[in-house]
Image (cartoon, rainbow, N blue to C red; front, side, top):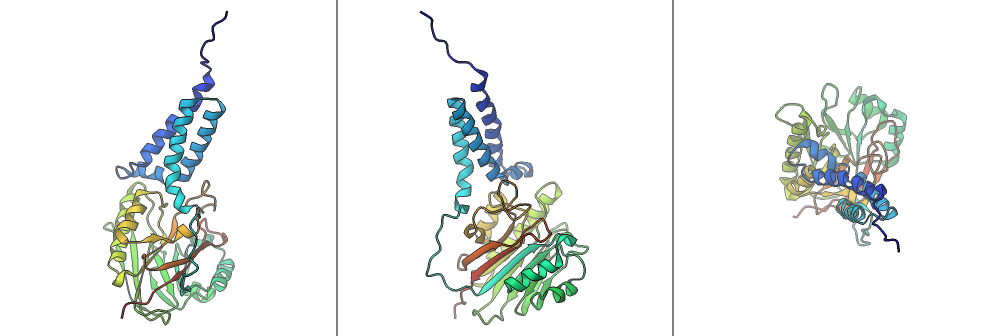
Length: 324
């Protein structure tokens, strides 16, 4: 009577060979505080989750229990940080009406279609517009596109990470703080003249340096400044907006939220990328509007792509009145 021998088919090993590099990448993505190169991996959390799902499928298809089990564990680890962005939260019907609309957009210099941008401003009628990588004359841009009348900040011309804020209301005071190397900047502006709420609102805007090579140090300093400005805002009422060159899954992003006492308005939009593509597996979520916890997020949505690699982000907020 023939004796059955174990199946040592090479296909049983392949799922494990796929899962092991994925396990190394997942482990490295949680060590970003050690080195910027490891921190970069964390930005691709949705991609790691998708690869983990594929790896689970391979393990089940080829009946490789060890590979499937490891892949399933990786799927859980990589999916957990994405859950808050899957749009599962429901909005309260008792939410106050919106009284502030913020639009943040990286124009990517000449890439933006100016007529399309003008249509965007006319359609959305934002109260605050945060723009980075502006090309040409800022005053001419404001007149041509009917941007809000009051302005603060520095244009991008000659300043790699300059940013400009346009406001519907007068800016009582504004200043720019720079990183130690003089490359990165953070704009802080106080809005105290709005008839829609009592008290002042601090608006913080920046275009962060990319998180690799020397840019990693510049970005870290910018985020440190931004977090401090948010934490020190009067009655802790602050809005932070701009191209942060960070995804929500990076350790630097989590630290910014914790140190600044901020929440991500992107939670209400869901898992939608803001750069290169709306799809989280083809693009990245790097353009953000963050707010203090007492500010209610009514809506967060992306506009159409109008030339730049970035999508405009429009957020409706309810700003509470300051205590008497």
